[in-house]
Amino acid sequence: AIRYHNWEVRYEYKSPDCYQKLVITINGQTPGPTIEAQQGDTIVVELKNSLVTENVAIHWHGIHQGLTWGKDREVVSGFECDQRGTPWFDGVAGVTQCPIVPGDTFVYKFVVDRPGTYLYHAHYGLQRVNGLFGMIQVSLPPGVSEPYTYDDEKSIILTDWYHKSTFEQATGLLSIPFGWVGEPQSLLIQGKGSFNCSTPGIEAKLCNATNPECSPYVMTVVPGKTYKLRIGSLTSLEALSFEIEGHNMTVVEADGSNVEPFVVKNLFIYSGETYSVLIKANQAPTRNYWIVSKVVARNSTTPNGLAIFNYHPNNPTTSPPTVPPVGPAWNDVEPRLAQSQATKARQGYITPPPEKSDRVIVLLNTQNKINGYTRWSVNNVSFNLPNTPYLIAVKEKLHHVFNQSPPPNGYDHRHYDIFNPPTNPNATTSTSIYKLQFDSTVDIVIQNANALPANDSETHPWHLHGHDFWVMGYGKGKFNIHKDPKKYNLVDPILKNTVSVQPYGWTALRFRANNPGVWYFHCHIEYHLFLGMGVVFEEGVKKLGKLPPSIFGCGDAKVSP
Ligand SMILES: O=C1O[C@H]([C@@H](O)CO)C(O)=C1O
Image 1 (spheres, rainbow, N blue to C red):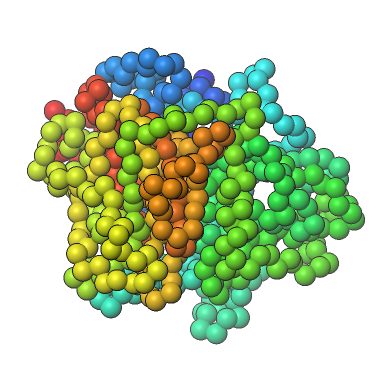
Image 2: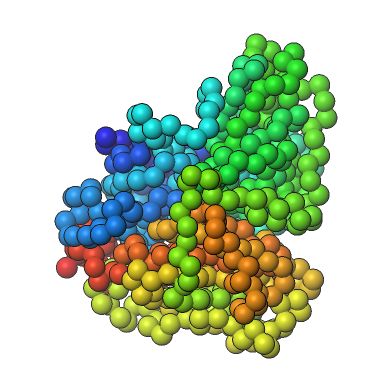
């Protein structure tokens, strides 16, 4: 089926956490409308940019934009045809398309070829921070059922929320001295939070604690029933712990893959990840319970996000009689690593990875000063987008629009102490990209190191466009290229599109470069990406037919040839 959506994107005043500010809405909503579809459906989104002074582009997070069924898939020309990849609709301004200028309408059209929980969000500047995002839910075709049962389904998006405008944030991040955005003012659960309006310095007319826009989100359940809850995180900065007071959760899905079920009291979720959990409403039905979202991995001042788990027929607005659970310690890496390691492909749904890879790329994450500016770098290269999208530049052989020499395949691990902040005097900014041999198997090892402040290494969630990767392993300290690959999980690794890398730790991934296109791979912390924490992979662009004219219109790609 074709699922048609007509969206208008614009700025509006909203008070998601009681504090009024300009946010970006889709058809008046943030989070935007949920896209519901069945496996194999074609999604058409006709998007009108009514932002007046800003471009826009929307990324369909977790959607491959390539048809992965059938082994000998032929990529043919003619972009009207559905039975092929659509790498030009991945929605990244500067990578796969020119941005959509104010007043313009752009049509995204792509197939959702796998069931599961996915997301969509702005991929232009810092717009995601302003609320331009939503969820994509792809169900199985009729007659096919999931390997678990439940009575009903719910979904929520978790975010963090800032009061400063993204313009002010961007100005700080691009200044000397560096103006860091700091910790968010609140955490939102499905677009609702609660900032304390009596905080000193808050203008009374901008903050109204009784505004219905910031009444807590309520999830109503019927006693005894089991619910599938889809959870996505699109935080700008924070890693979260999510918990429903007194209720265990059974994890069954991660980033669209079936998970060998395991039970948690709290779920750790990083920006860009999605999970489905099963929850049984099996507690005393005479009261409501707290739903809590809490910052982990940073020593944050942000108060917990709260929502209400409402047992029908209790009053949905009645606060639970208890103090909300405090959740795990922010700095305890062990339970987070344990959850990541417990997340394996479900028996009967395992796609084993190739046993060997053709190429290994080690990516060292560092925070650097470049010409006095604070940046994030990968192998000492801080990434900048060119004015002409890579997809067009590669396909049309516009070699001058980006640096043609490849970025480094690794870093000098013998002479780099990941625990002590070296000055990284050689870091540069660059537009260069990794060219992958088509259909080769690629291993990526992401290595975290010190940030600029001493004794400080952060958690980074890395997201790959256009593919799922097998999560081969996680480790502490410096990755050892001789010993660590021997411990890779070749049996039942999960396929994901976003993965966490813990402080001073590493994460190893494997994927097949079999989707013709140009694909971003980056830290999903919006501010880190903004400061250069990403790379781009190109594979098989030669195989693509004519690019659709609608993605042209910027840089040296003004019109379709
Ligand atoms: O990118 C970042 O910058 C700050 C800090 O490292 C420097 O102020 C921080 O916590 C980040 O995540």
